[in-house]
Image: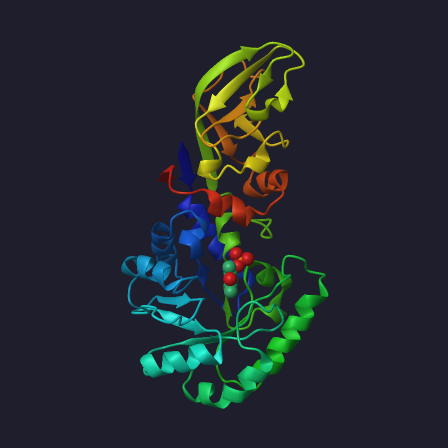
Length: 338
Ligand SMILES: *Cc1c(COP(=O)(O)O)cnc(C)c1O
């Protein structure tokens, strides 16, 4: 089971997204261990390429990458200052007045940032909460003020313009760097770029960055092949029955490895040198079965994620998004960095 991760493609995607927002600095979002691909390796390569701002969800994730980055790299923690958090060497993005006062009491001279809610209603201070403490916050010079877009992957969605206006209203007259755009926001255009952009999924080859270079290849070893006769079924629940003589290959990975069970007989395939071998029957915990009848010879490995079936195509088959496909690929794979 090998998960091949092309670090140079991640760097190229970061540079390409940074070039779409020429007036802004480009950060890199590496939460959830770099969207499941290994944050330590990714941040070191992106630092080399010029990235100095990194975002993680949790302080624990920040501590894991801190040793892999020089001191001038800033690691911002999106969950902010939670009670009891160890934020040594990290910058909390404070999401509420409560977090702000906690942080200033405990880390009075250390850097912090602010998140405002511009309409998503997930994280950040609401307008009224913000206006009550705004002067006090600004006097202490936050590193930046940010907000997050709910619908940036749908350019025509009216929430984009509404959130942009709300963010402008709340930050008017603030002499502090501003940040609103993730991958989707970068692609919405310069109105959304402000001073700092925060791409995540686009770095890893995911939509909505359609021009991304592919980053991941997932190759699964074939354990066994067998002929099945018309009328024979394959897998749990006997959900697939051969209509004609077929050859079935069984590969060594399953839903315990993040190969979502929703991919069972979904139209998704395993690939051998560009030839599609449809997944047939149910994905089980450690095994997937595919119809390899069309192959002249069955190779040692079949690919689930490859240029013929990138993460977003696989996500469509599973009824989910590329983000979930990536972050579901957990630790059981041997990771090979290119
Ligand atoms: C996850 C996240 C990002 C990155 O989003 P992508 O869509 O992956 O580019 C940026 N900002 C915040 C607040 C996030 O939660």
